[in-house]
Image 1: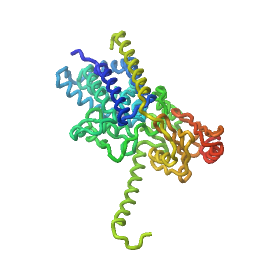
Image 2: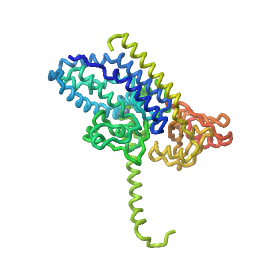
Image 3: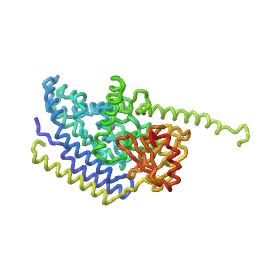
Image 4: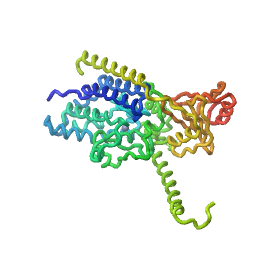
Length: 318
Length: 143
Ligand SMILES: [Zn+2]
Ligand SMILES: [Zn+2]
């Protein structure tokens, strides 16, 4: 086994330098925005994430070491194995991320990353503290190990994937050449992912390659006439790291406690975020449907109005 | 990261970098507090956040840090709150606000909302505050 470096540790000084550069750029041009309270929250969440990774990481490691013996193949350390592992890991990331948005138990963890109403490089570091406790790694992390990729290789490419995603959290990069936007996840695509405009909700789950979204029907291009509004459907209004960390867990506990049946309790726990038994709350599916209905009504009205306006008026205008 | 000394060094370095970045952000600024001074703009903001919200009568707090907007048909009450440079919105049906009370020209709200348990809107004067308190009393469980 080669002695692999920790990509995230190496990247930290680069992250810091890029954040300083973006802050200066923001100050000079106004093309990005930073707010000290929000910056502090994001960076403290990032710190906490590293600490929790050290403190709780052993849970996942123990699991992977256990299942390693059931691997189908012994793939080993060839250079091509790294490349294949990187691409497959990104494919798994897509699905893991998609489920993080559609199952409230996992959303309670991932919502932390989306809780800022700003979008700058510090937002990339706004990460949850309790991730290993959601047991998501069992459902999504196990596949590559069971295929036969070494655990350390899977961890290494996973870290590379996260490092890649740092630089796309910025408003300073408008759009890149077409072929890059076609294949890679870019600042433009990921801005859409962080936006709450109904047309953008639950889109662009990609980590490194945007092709997964194109393939599985979740791609949405950033539109020139639809400026991204960042955050979550019900924005928090606080920069308190503890509230940011725990708020959705508190919501789950409250709802499950008030549930009238096992089915309701399961819905509140494992249903999509915003699910409620009578549909009185807004899940992103409901929001998108309401919005599409309104758009259709508006376009319908526009559709009949347009020919009338274009045709010569048959009667005197009022 | 197995060596505890290296780990402690890394964490101390990261904490220092975090403190430095926050300090730098405070130093260079580059943001301005959100100002809510136009009820119509506040209504538009609500309509953005809540699909189908049709803004009706509204009022902004004297300090520009809050706005109240009733839906045109009176069915829902929208609240826009300035938090730093951003705005946060909430929409309530009758009975969904825990309590609304008036303290001079200020309206105090309490919510069953873990991330936003209370809010204050300082209106132009006592009379305007009282007018709005009675207008929105039905949205509160107690007032
Ligand atoms: Zn996400
Ligand atoms: Zn992101």
